Length: 119
Ligand SMILES: [Zn+2]
Image (cartoon, rainbow, N blue to C red):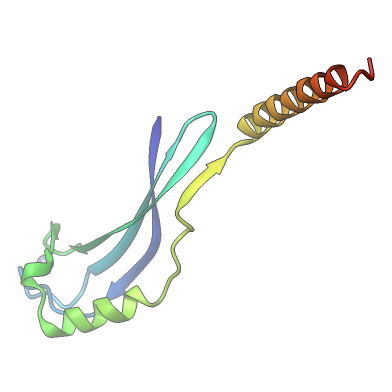
């Protein structure tokens, strides 16, 4: 099963980095994961949030965020809509399920006709 990550929202923010105190280069990323094989696509409900400083090349973890970063984080969380979570069937799976359903329906139809004396 292939696992993919999508950056569903990315925002450059102007807050100071708690590690290097630079006011430039802070980036919020909101990442959603998908698992995929030849039959299905499974989209995760969880969204991974990441704050990265491009000046000191370090991730800034939520424990070190100040109030200003928290406010920007809450605002940025409202700026996107995630992909709907759940299971999506691919064409191949839909075809196989459709053929299975048709086969079962015709077997059931024949069985009912034989039971009622139509054949
Ligand atoms: Zn930094």
